[in-house]
Image (tube, rainbow, N blue to C red; front, side):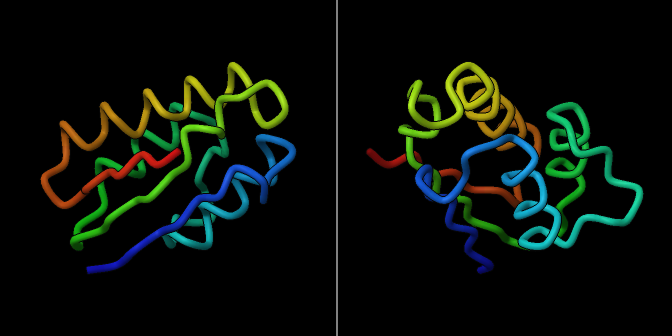
Length: 90
């Protein structure tokens, strides 16, 4: 199983996080670098993948509201793609 670790402290902007996800999830060049594109990309993942993300991504000192929306995208995508597993840590 492929594992993707997302540490809140590693990203200070949504753009930094999006660049990391492009590489970590092998998204294509045409990936849109936004949350809608992230959902689309996650639902197309065809290998068993576990995403481990800190709930602190949504803290104000990290990505705030964008982080909240990001967590919601991951939660929805996991429901829609049986190849994905999500672990939200402290």
